[in-house]
Amino acid sequence: MLWLLSLASVLLACAVIGLGLKLRKRSTHLTYIHEKVSNILEQDTFERLLVFDSDVEVSRLLNDMNRLLEHAHLAKADHINQEKEMRNMLSNISHDLKTPLTVVLGYSETLLQSASLTDAERRVMTEKIQDKAQEVQRLIHSFFDLARLESGDRELELSRVNISELSRVKMLSFYELLTKLGLHVELDIPEKDVFVRANEEALDRVLDNLITNAMKYGADGKVLGISILHRKGEPVTIQVWDRGKGIPEKEHSRVFERMYTLEDSRNRMYQGSGLGLTITKRLVERMGGRIDVHSVPHQRTVFSFTLEEMQDHKV
Image (tube, rainbow, N blue to C red; front, side, top):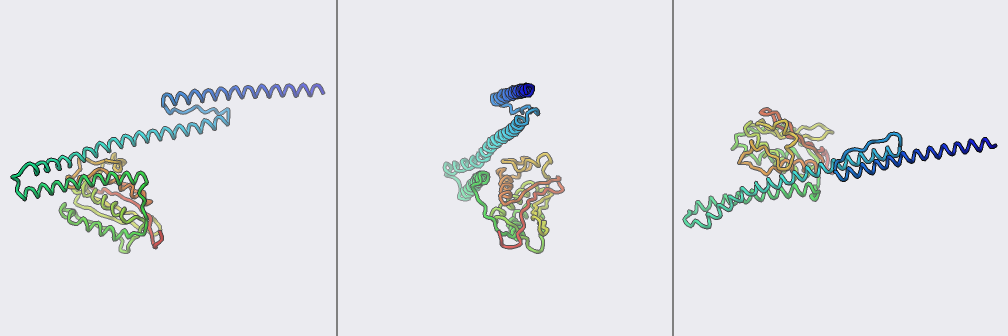
């Protein structure tokens, strides 16, 4: 009987010693975690924690903390990038506002101080003032439209929209400008009307922005087209394309950024704010679609976006 008690005492002692060693090791691990996390917070390094495989619970905790640190690092990087984009956007908007406002002030000062101007001269200056004032208004509207889209304040009511008819009407509305630029138009639209789930006003603006962009940067190719690709049961793809100088491949990922413009291609007739494609992307996404760009200079530059097909009147 005594030997059983002795054995039990030995086993108990071993268990206590084992538990003590385990607690000491865990204490060491927790001390490491505390010191490492404190160092990360003080130095803002976002480095990762060493994972100890010998302790399942601590290992799980460390893995969770590493995921949290990765998330925090990505969030901070995104915040820094957004701040940089915002500063660039405000700087560019200030520059774009300054140019037309300088013209407005110059002509208005001339009108006020030059009594010898003829009626014809005054009319020309007044028209220029109005044109530049409208340019400022368009820029301000674009800025606030983008702000509303990115904040989620603007709700888009989706319904059944005839993309075939809308594309034809939209291209027809540009007829005078297209003719002036000597652009040949190609429409590749199925004979049977195609309907998509969209907001008609937003979709009209998407087409407007993409056609304007094609005229701005692709007029030297002398061809501008709209294609609608449709297979039953699949999303509808709408393409606006041209054969102009195109977009360098390294720039493809940047064309939808705020205030991005190809400065060497900017045509004064269609000088824009650099917000058009960003707004276009946000609108397409708010309608449940996606937009991409592919460009081979002087062959085909195409902006493609997809939307859900609607065969009936259900939203």
